[in-house]
Length: 376
Image 1: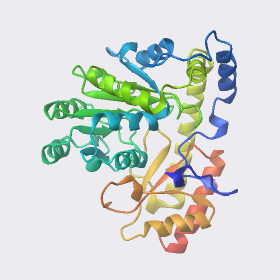
Image 2 (image 1 turned 180 degrees about the vertical axis):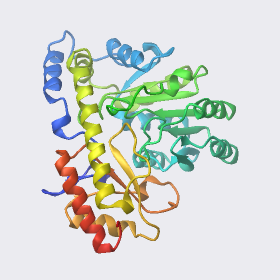
Image 3 (image 1 turned 60 degrees about the vertical axis):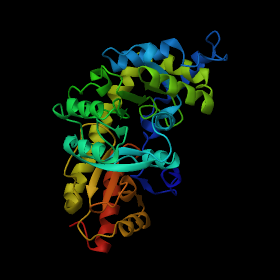
Image 4 (image 1 turned 90 degrees about the vertical axis):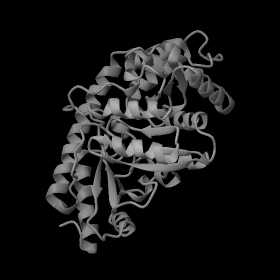
């Protein structure tokens, strides 16, 4: 995690970052929202433990279905929300089912909590239900963590056929599904209608939903929501109070101000256009300059591509050679909770300055790969 958050050396092109470049962040809208928030009556007082009502209501409307503000708990960013959730749902030493590959930050949370991540393979249609059912049966796990929409790192979207199966399997196992809906607001311009969150199909309190404003705004704008029903919401609230008391009220007020202005939908439309352009530029550059690494799946949402390295390639050598050539890429190994089937790279196109920088980054990566005899 420290490596992921480290700033690269000057001149290095960042294909390894997980946040929007400064040029894509709504800095003026954020500044205006913060200024207005600071003048709101009571803005510097103690907020309600669950979060201010207007913000909880906004998150509930965005999720849809039967979700109401009473089901929403405001949290301090997606990482904090996932930490609270896993602590609430599983005791130390318990197994927790995870997609394979999956977000390394979630694996770090699980291990820090003393949990045992158990991998369940993912293909381009999301987690494989028959393997999920087998994993529940073999381990006795009571938690499954997934990203049904534009999964990190594969970009997979859980198919319409598999959605009810996942909920049925979890319900039969007496387990919770933790839905990390982390990039719904980073959809690309050509994506078309998105599937609804799994939480909207859940009538039994099986799903704990996590969503955040951070990815679509700024890494410092750490406002997220936890959505749950029944006794689990009380556990989530109790753990968050012990760890954080509450999310600072000025930040919550600023979030409410931001999403309530015309600048918010304009920003999301701009980001959708930019991400599509950057994705297409990166995909075209890889197919032209590094056809041996071209992605098998190109998602219509999120901010990265997932590349499989040729069999026998030494992944750390590629990462090191790329950095020496002036481009930072993310190795695939940390995304697996067990031995990976092959070497991989994840390339982000959100944190770079422009499409021309993407083209130059691929050129540098080609130079690095040529020195190792791969990519052609």
